[in-house]
Length: 157
Image (cartoon, rainbow, N blue to C red):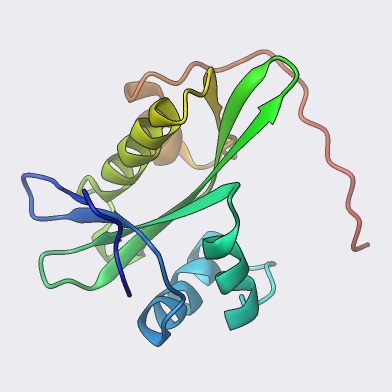
């Protein structure tokens, strides 16, 4: 998998990079990670993964451990709305075998840096209340809980 120039490495040896190609390594890693995020999600196809990488609206970040294995991922969507450029973080996942090692933080910080580079006004994300560790992480990184209603219309029901 090719990485974008300027990938970041943290003090604990974790590196975060932007995925540029949907090669077999990335596809296999995503096949392992996505079920840890959602048991109801359909398996990601190679075509769908390529679509995420090639879309100008989305950036797929991956985290690698010191052995260079992919151990986490995050998708950042950046789009222009009438009120300005907005960014949205989706599908943050860290392999359960390495959670608590700062990988989620490194992924989110890389996404925030990219959102700033894109001149986004805000970065939003949602997290289920039962994901207490993730919610603490987001608050520690400066995200504020908003009093809002989130609505969803299920188009596949």
